[in-house]
Image 1 (cartoon, rainbow, N blue to C red):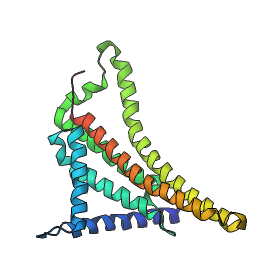
Image 2 (cartoon, one colour; image 1 turned 45 degrees about the vertical axis):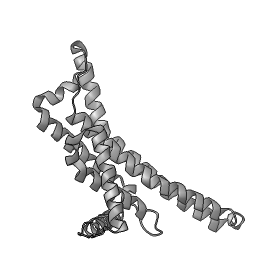
Image 3 (tube, rainbow, N blue to C red; image 1 turned 90 degrees about the horizontal axis):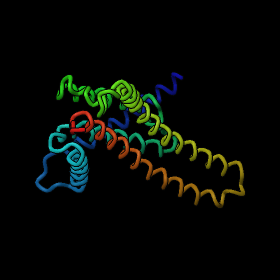
Image 4 (tube, helix red, strand yellow; image 1 turned 135 degrees about the vertical axis):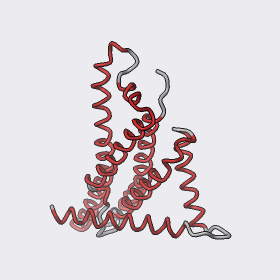
Length: 219
């Protein structure tokens, strides 16, 4: 267990270092932006548009949080595609830590902006059904960090296991050697797509949870 934990922390630090290094490299002033800087600016515009669409202009202050989470998850997922490397997001501890940060932060922001009124949306639209809605909402909110963590963990861990299983099959059974490269390329392509999809899913759900806490509409 200690070895697994150390690997998880080690590769997590690598992913964090890559993300920070690229941000610092892309943040250097330049008369003519490089292609990398343009790519980084495009990513930030994507995050800002996500926040504008769900929260409005007031949500732009959450850009550093969502952008940082996205970069860390993306590079963590990519590490899992390198032979001999382990995706930090393939460890439930990494994902739960990020999910708890989102959970605590959006509740903090909701209370900070709305005070005691933040808890009104826990009571539902009908006052006499408030006890029922309070229980449902509490369970729903507690489940959010759990589902965020498990979704990312299952996809990253499942993809790694599938790749290892295919490689093991090709080594043990020479008959499958001819077909395994094609299958391997296909699985790698699917896993690479999952790297983007799972990063986006975690980011957009974090934005939606923030929106639900800071934007209160009339029932």
